[in-house]
Length: 116
Image (tube, rainbow, N blue to C red):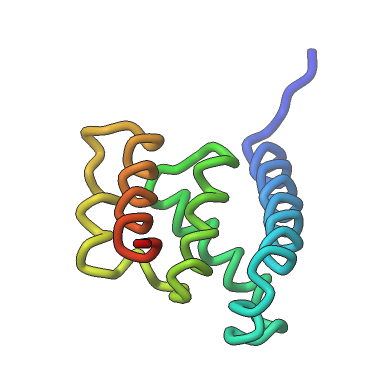
């Protein structure tokens, strides 16, 4: 019988997160190049990693929702956007699904930042 220890599961999970952060960093550098330059290119992997951790703390667990969270860092040009007064109540409303919380954030951003 194969027995997997908790420490092995954690190591596997950590490795998966590192690979995800690496892939997401590449995407961010490609899509948000001018925003990345403002933050300093040498800082982008750390910013993405911190945002991924913060997304997980807010109970976003799918790659899609975590990616959307990270993209908001660059759209709003704020690595700590989750502290904004209008963002926090949405992020902490656990009565709605993670998808609906993220959709609410994106709708607010669209209304506020992408007006015609």
